[in-house]
Amino acid sequence: MPADQRKYFLDWLRVAAFALLIVYHIGMLYVPWDFHVKSACILEWLAWPMVALNPWRLALLFFISGVACRHLLDREGPGAFLRGRITRLLPILLLGVLVLVPPQSYLELRQDNAIPPGFLSFWLGHYLVADQSFGIILPTWNHLWFVAYLLVYAALLAGLAAALPRGIERLAGWVERQDPLVPLLAVGLWFAAANVLALLFRPDTHALVDDWAAHLRWLGLFLAGILLAKSGVWNYLEARRRPLARAAVLCMAGFLALRYGLRAGLVPDVWRLPLYGTAAAIFGWTMILALCGLTKAWFDRPSPLLRYLTRAILPFYALHQTVLILLAVALFACQLPVLAEMPLLFILTLAASWVLYELAIRKNRLFGPLFGLGQRAQAQR
View 1 (tube, rainbow, N blue to C red):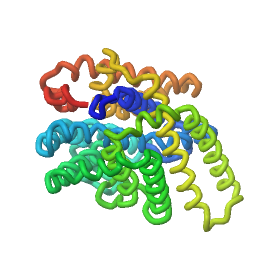
View 2: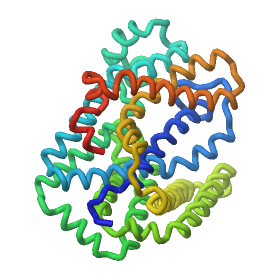
View 3: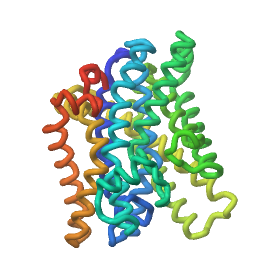
């Protein structure tokens, strides 16, 4: 496969990762962790599959984004690349902060009885004026933090490419000349070190400016995608997909066993965070490599469905959490059995997001560009 050929398997992986994000956010309603609104029925057991997703789901997205950005940068050059990323990502981030996210904050405070009914008065009198008296940040980007981080990383990449026109190409060329195992192990070590530093010194904040440990992790994976984008690592992973898949399953089992041991007090306190961070990185990176190898073998081909889904990803991502929380609050009042409520939430969230996308976004000249679907974006990932 030519190095610059579109990697359709990564497009499929990205679509699957964003679909999994909807499932994950539904789970957040029911696990004993903080979220914007919570069900009255908390399911302790649900935390285990959620924990199994955490080490790799976001890491996969930043890694794939790095691959996509490398191809775009090489095709367009730094200036056009940056303009394209700004045109695609900045409008949806601003729309999200000002319009899409406020209902989440409103319903969160309403569930806590912290404000009286009336969204408009909350939006004008508290949210837009940055009222910080409720113990939550207003205004905020909530789930759209990923878009903000990706935009900043793209800007850094464009700046680096402009300052050192052949620097990225030369560094990537050096990486490509190595045995594929060498850069893959290096990324895994970086991932583990970033995890441990974050757990020991600076847990993720999603606030951009004070999130240095998270930047070590996410920016590191983004850069890994950039450097590996045109290398032979993809064929290497495809050829080893079966042992990688077995290793990922074993790593997951070991990671969950370690978590059980930590919760049971079987590990000395001094080792708890370093062991957990390292195990999470080993499992997360092995899972990412296994998924890349498997999808490279099975799904590396275009299709009309893939083209549709690839274009719809960003609007769905922007819409889904607000749609989900609105539906959740309505369904909670119906007091349905939780095992019926959860799949219903998934179906309704997908259906409502799709209706909004089809009727108000996909072919709309006003709202389409606000959701990253301008004419320029149609030709991009």
